[in-house]
Length: 186
Image (cartoon, rainbow, N blue to C red; front, side, top):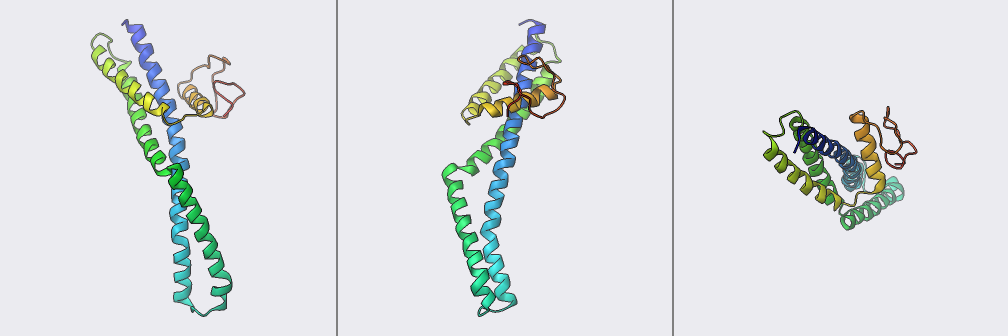
């Protein structure tokens, strides 16, 4: 592989690894927030009831008429949210996303360093890294990445690397979505 082609391939892998890490960073935020909400709601009712009973009385009209129905409703809502979380496997999605961010960030950094080296000296390292890249890419594809997420990733990468979109010909100056079906519409 020639020196120029080597640098292009390293940059391409770096570019796409960066974008993919951004997709999964967004998922980490989304599912992390959902899982924290379930934990919070799971503890809210017992803490409210326990605190009220410890502070006042079990016989209080406020407890029977207001607090118990509110806590009961919160408990039902939390149970439904927990069931949805189990069925949709939010914890697995969250864990995978954390691993993908870590792996894609590592690949991005490795390809960034590698592109500034000699192609002949580092061809073996390049082959190993592209094998890791392909395995991670295949695993990530299995996580049902939507076209909106792909456009989001493209916008993030174009902005980060100050590159021009091949479809619309614009170099993004912000992360706000454009009308482009390659780097916008997310």
